[in-house]
Image 1 (cartoon, rainbow, N blue to C red):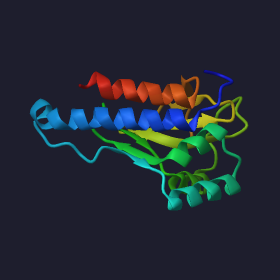
Image 2: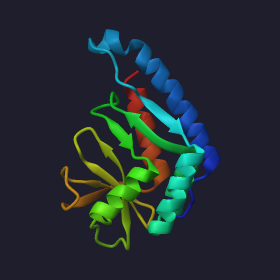
Image 3: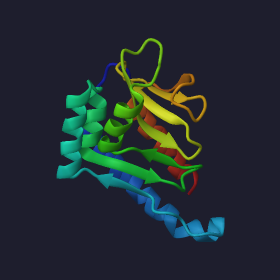
Length: 165
């Protein structure tokens, strides 16, 4: 939904639905895969993660949708969804920004890496609101558009969870 901003209530609802689907997925995981699942969770934001989000905003301009996301959730660890998906905490995003800088994406003034998959591919959100995925497990290679918005990215992630049920 280009042009529309991510709504905190939508994120809360997404988190509740993802949590319910993860609970159901984990109940049958051992029987389906033959080994126990890891810790799969979408963690609610805390006072500490709110402080980390504020520190990230002070460090560099970040897209408002990412601020909205971090005001509701602090991170997600989904090692058993496909090859794994991880939404990094705001403290981790700040640490990576200090170490590596913004993702080098043409046409984006700034793009922050905020997530990764189990194969090491990175996901960045640009100031345009688009989500980009690295073509390799590197900060320096090309990035392709993965979703038109953060909401679309989260919807895709939900689809990956429910496709495993």
